[in-house]
Length: 315
Length: 315
Image (cartoon, rainbow over all chains, first blue to last red; front, side, top):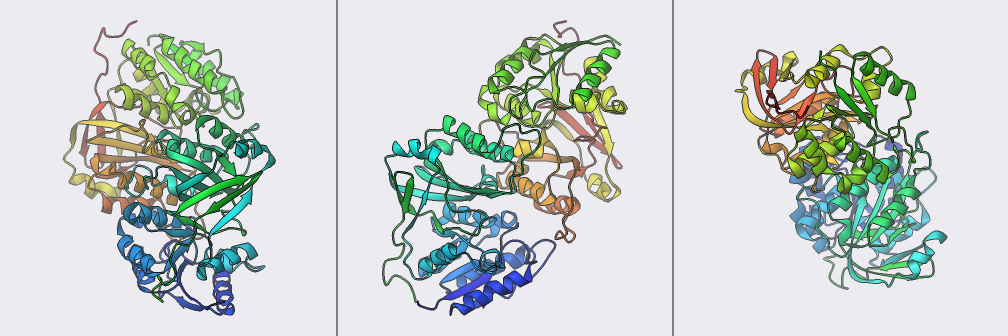
């Protein structure tokens, strides 16, 4: 396995769980990687990892790092505050040079803005602390996917849908050249109506969320629907929606009813089971990449192929 | 005081607090009003006051009621599901005939859609159960404002801003012919990017919310800002933001920092203290009406004048 250069920075919330943060760095170093830590990675200002200017500067340094991967320390909240200051062009250039940007949750704001403004592809995937610094060690699948990215070998992913979706899949004829995009539903929806929301036709939209009640998830999906976004998608992939506490007044209203209702309202298949979200076992997904999607029985395969031709990387 | 005809219906969540619901009806009856209850007012389906079709039919019956006021039993969640089925034209005609539509919270979705589609004016104000059915009796100011509406006498409202906003008000030259609009921030923001979001230039935007963390409130305000909405407003009025629990990691980040930051980012004055929100003491505010706003010291006055010329009412 080739050793790689990983740049750690904090564009969102302040790092509070320093133990997980340190464990994450140690884990990456133990794998033989060179871990470079941004000078403001542990900055704090209110709930943020430094004030807005500090976090914008950290993004610029990550773009200038020439690392193989720029990995967020954690998500949280902070990027929607600075959407108009994110150095999208510099990040897109860095990606062209071979630096992959990886993160999730609040990071969805950057990924969408970046794709909307430049078309550059970034990766929905782990964060340093929560994933690499997990107390009982990083998840094996997550780590394998991350390693695939580092070694330039990741070409796709697959998962199995629940039995009740088998019939839907039977009628699914596959997709070619669709644009994969998405991320955290709440953050993605918070970009609607702004110039930072990507206009994706014939897309494969993947979504996940954490600590949102199903009624809020439904309201956000309806916003995407009423805005015409869902009608332009060829597939909607639901990852994990964790921490969706039931309320006594729900009376049978839950994520399943939300997904079932959505299926009655849009043409595109709504598939669940995508291994992504605020869960340890997560795959890496290229936001903005062209993908092919196929199904066999209850198994879904999504392929994006090599993003970089051999020799294309700057180092 | 003239006795009026009040129509009670349930467009959103199911009525769970039946005691408050009954107290509300009794209170309105004790004031001498004729209270007509929609046949589906106590319907339930999952967490809703009947399925979508039932609640759409209830809206149609409210529009056909020829009541003086159509008042929601409660808010909750349900109207964003049926935005494309709300009988906006029928409601607008009912309003033209003299039926005033009153509600808040989830009702913001109907009010915005109605104004966007027809220009009709509805009222942000009380709900039956929570306000008229309050255990220790309805709030006097709310009740006086509601009575003003019933008697056709409500012409405006006023409130005092906190001392720290006095300087801002000193430079405020007043507004004429601005469009008052707004409501629940979360519901209003959930319409962005859809055809149900009103395009209001030179507006006075009022906002309230409940049980949202300040970071979520800021994210929603930023969405309105990035969408260009706030730049088109002449004033932003913040009502009550209740239930905004602090988290240990906020470190000084709160509603005050949210409002202060917003003031640095938009031209329009951001005034707090508007007596509206999920609080007992609330005024009634006409969504879509032209208003004049003036200030004297720390006192703000907002006037909308008579909406209906004498004799214009159908009954």
